[in-house]
Length: 68
Image (cartoon, rainbow, N blue to C red; front, side, top):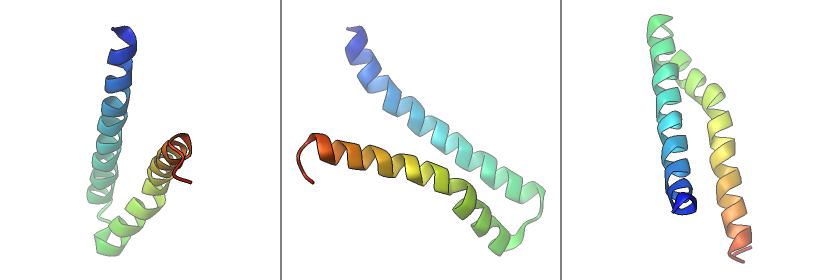
């Protein structure tokens, strides 16, 4: 039971954390009056870490399932 719970809740909580981080980046851009280009750069630069994590998850899933 605990293993099933952990298998479902972990991706859900990580997804929620990523959405919260996007909100923080948006709020940071709004409070600093970054403008369109500044907001875009904040999302690109600060969101690169989140994108790297998602890429790692996809690659590891592909390797485990024999797709690569």
